[in-house]
Length: 300
Image 1 (tube, rainbow, N blue to C red):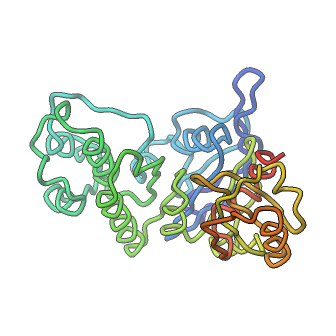
Image 2: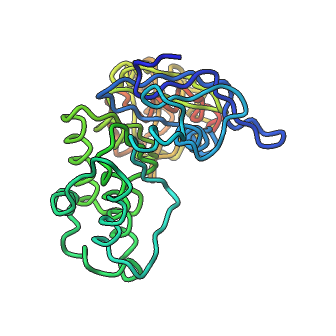
């Protein structure tokens, strides 16, 4: 095992009956990295994180956190986690929850400072049951930080948050990285992954299909992204020369083309009423779609 990595997984598999949720994952994350674990629902992301947290035991393989087995007391003391599905006792306030959780750790964060840094001062003394969904998520984020973790797991951290609250989470993540902390992030918001992660790992059907620096993953899709409103069907557009993939985007289509000029000539010839046309370089979303073949499947 790689004991120098903050998180190291080797040959991790997890099966539930005949379903193979995680299929032989090898992954090492180093100190100071923000690694985004991406993929469709059912790709195996959450199950892998549960194995890394020690919440479930792998069917095969091993996971270490700071050189210790996942789920061991020393590993638990070094991590923080904000899971997608979690809740807290309703009659306690955020401040009370933080004070209680702080007693579980040997070197917890200062509660007053943490409340200020995470922006929950306005409702820190309100009972949890009276908080909105977004406020509850912000309290859960603060609790993930209360142990001053070396490794932080964030599973869809900004779900239910408005833009200002999401930006506050992003700022806290960046501040942690500046202090040498390590982050493993899952998110369906690719803007979030693009803004925060310096490394992208893409999972599909329980395995890793891509792993590299964010810029490299983004750059795996060449050509151009054409966005437009058209009367043409996806099945018609996918047959146009140069088109690699097509998917719906709002009221129009997002088309990845290997030859933008050629594709545009055919689009304009076939639909004289084409409108809201933009051409730009493909981004992270198009790269992930290309790696997992989702756009091609949708257009077929």
